[in-house]
Length: 422
Length: 113
Image (cartoon, rainbow over all chains, first blue to last red; front, side, top):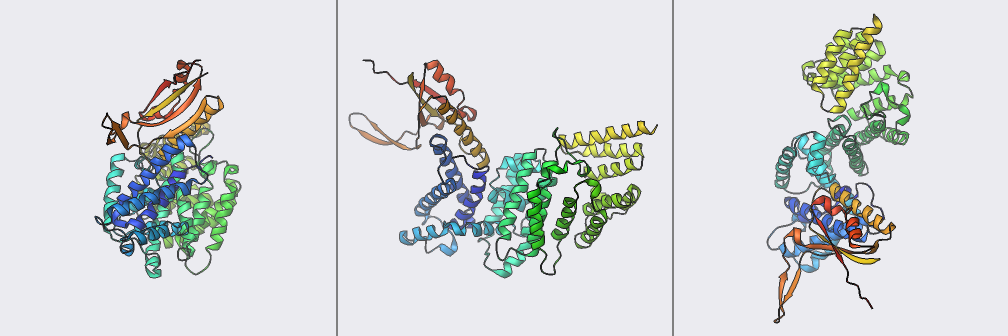
């Protein structure tokens, strides 16, 4: 049979999570070795004999057998999972305990335990996201480096330090403790949100890498949303937000592979099924009285999805939603997006005024799309020379070839506009 | 048509799950091509790295072979081809070559009557 796309990657996350439960969080590196070994075996056997009927079960069984070997061999030399300690001591209880750990019904919970453990408050947010990517998403160092546009060595160093901190943090997070769960939940939601944003807005020029990050965040947020304690209104809203935004991914690159701005996108390429899925989650998120930033951002994405043409966008609804977002989660980026919406609703001049009024404007100086937004609005006010300057500033900050090509086209548009004015 | 044995040696192990899967998918595609072209006699088997070596008149059994990873036979496949040149040509597509491994092509001796 043909293995599904990313089978190894997805199984890797499940296997690391389950093995860590057997070995204990302090033996994380051992769990990763066993998983690596299982993939080597799969590769060796499958490449000649073909992929088995149930590849996931084959991999899990291989990992289980290997785990049993390790536990038998090292049970006197190492300590393993503290809560299983005694069970792992005798042969008779050992195999029963391992069977139970590898029981397929517990795999979703194992992944949640790992997800919550990765979002330890001692770790910086970027470190949390990288850990989630590697341990749950099965991404390799090279792939993470490519997503974050940084070097292999930098990611390796960061990951090894974070894993050390994680291993030292003691035991796996206890997802059965409702109070602890509720306390850690916002950090987990935030890490998944950042993971998705890295895919959606990130600097990587590789569209494939970015789409993988978005789809991985959706897989993980669904795990959270399917757990009784995880399925809070903000989790559901986050799930809706991811689907609604990811629906636009197919249209973000035009036929030539160049970046396509929202006003330019071929909306027939938006994924209608994802939009429907996102709306369903957004509806399910509407219980309770808590209005999270995820609710508001999902609502904004939903308004965009409603408009079959850019001209049909309900800008007054969008400005109102950004106003709300500014009260819940104010940031210069949110304010910039609000200003762009204001420009659509009340004209480019008002948009520029809104940009000038942004608190903490200097924090946007290194962000290429801040300068591009200014350029766009100046261009609409027919201040071609000023617009040109802003696009140049954006170009100097562009993070990859795709962004550069996009900005070069806008610079060319300034020249065209100037000529047509004469 | 004559028979040939492919002996696979070396090739990098490890890499990320995604990289491993991509390598595997190349193997599956290559095997499929050999099947379609009618050259695959038997896909063969992978071999474990460890084993025993039995030596001499004293039948001494030692652990082994402990060759360097690049020299160790990791698996084999039985091929049917017109000639040794043709069999070697077919081995060009083997994905092990992309990860630093080698394919040794050996004609199976014919039993002429």
